[in-house]
Each structure stands twice: as C-alpha cells, then as structure tokens.
Length: 97
Image (cartoon, rainbow, N blue to C red; front, top):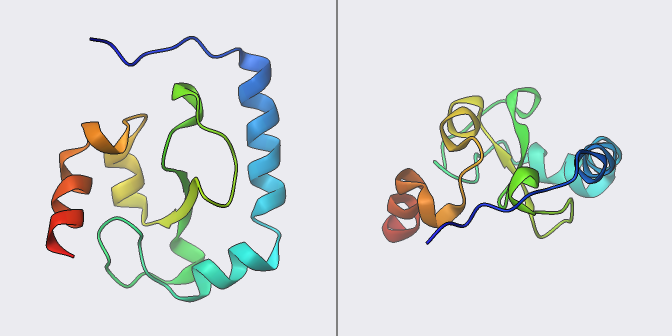
C-alpha cells in the first residue's frame, strides 16, 4: 500500500506562500517563543525553530495552524516528507508522553 499522491507544483507554491504569511502572525510567534521542538521536546532558541508541516505539502498537507508545528532543524531534516506514522522517531516521542 502506497501513501504517495501527486501534488501540483502550483499548489505547493501557494502553500509555501501561506507558510511565509503564517510565520509573520502572532500565533506563530507565540508558538516559537516557547522554544520547544514539537517532535523531540528539547529546548531550542526560538530563532532556530523551523515551521514544519506535520503532513508534508508534498504528501497533500496544507498550511493550517493545525498542521504547522515548530521543529528543531535536526528533527525537521530527519522527518523530511514522511508522514508521522512513517517516522519512527515521532512515534517514539508520542509513546514517551
């Protein structure tokens, strides 16, 4: 069973534009001000947190407050375009909580 879907490049560009706008909102600034990575839970300087789509844009995710979380660069790089159910590190973090 494959979870891959084809996403139009135009849609991805639009969603990335929404991401840039979302990062300017107070909602996002408050999220990163906490200085905690959503995935590993480690403290991170707010300026070093990245916006990660839980369901990646390339996999059909959208830029919404419910799908965007602050992530450290290490976690964001490890997750890449994986869905949470495909990323073992994410699953282990959920089990520890």
